[in-house]
Image (cartoon, rainbow, N blue to C red):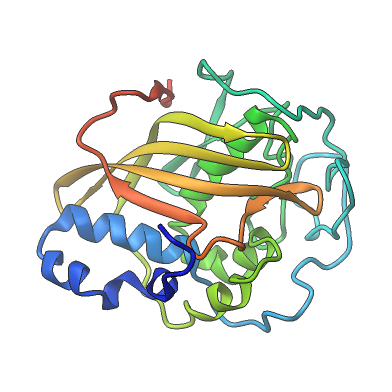
Length: 249
């Protein structure tokens, strides 16, 4: 999707393609995820979204202040500037309401903000994978929107418009979703693109989807790359062919 297309940052609920397909529950689910993933509630987009405080221990701590270079925002060790993930990593699954999300003592998330969003992922391909999967699940939670997205949207030309566009955004409801697989599309230590497959149900309908996150290492953590008009893209999938299986076990 071209960054030059001004429609990329518009709500998918206003596009003719969505309106025409609105009767298809599966597509409603997919478009709702896109909406929440790239929008946020009230807030001054020019304000510093990361009040200073940090911790080297996992758990509930204040939102972190930015750090420079490869240093982790919460002191998480490990840096890899190239590589990929070819097999499902060792994972401890936890729950956000009814939605399972992956955690790792090595890859993160290593900290939780007072408002409840999870952050601080390792500067490695595994860290980028765990970040993307957590972003996909956190996008369902409207209560996190006004604090999580100001943190997770890295500086970039589209950051202000992404922050402002979701003030009155509807929140998907009645949805159950779970991670189903992944593909690390690219990774160079500074940027990563990770495709996380999920399966979701709503109103008795089942949809298999793909959540592609464009990430950048910024302020000591993996964040959504706001130099892209749509740093989190969701599409429907016919099946899970080509994905490495990654499910709650």
